[in-house]
Length: 144
Image (cartoon, rainbow, N blue to C red; front, side, top):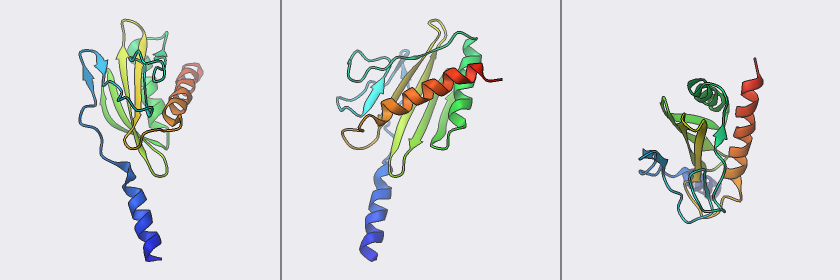
C-alpha cells in the first residue's frame, strides 16, 4: 500500500514547472524544441506545424470567443490573458501541457502553440487537442 501511494505521488509530480521562456518576442511565440511533443503555427518544421486559427469577425470579438471557449473546458486553466495573448495549462490525468495563443489582427489569425512540459513524445495529444479547440472555436461563431 505504501509503495502504491509513493508511486502515485511520484506520478502526480509529472506536472512539471512551466518553462521560463513562454510568451511573445517580436510578434512570435516561443520556438518549439526539437522534440515531437510541441506544435506551433509559426514554425517551418512540417512535423510540428499546425495552421493558425482563422476568423472573419472582429479581431477583438474573435479573441474573446476563443477565451470563452478555453474557459468552458474542464481540462484548461487560463494562466495569463492580455488583449492579444493567452497562456493556458491543459491538464490530463497525469500531465500538464502549456498552450499559447497570439492574436494577429492584421492577418485575421490566432497563432497557436502547445507543448508538453515533460517527456519526448506526446503521441499526438497536443495536435489533437488543438484541432478539437479549432472546431470548438469555429462552432462558437455559429452559436447564439
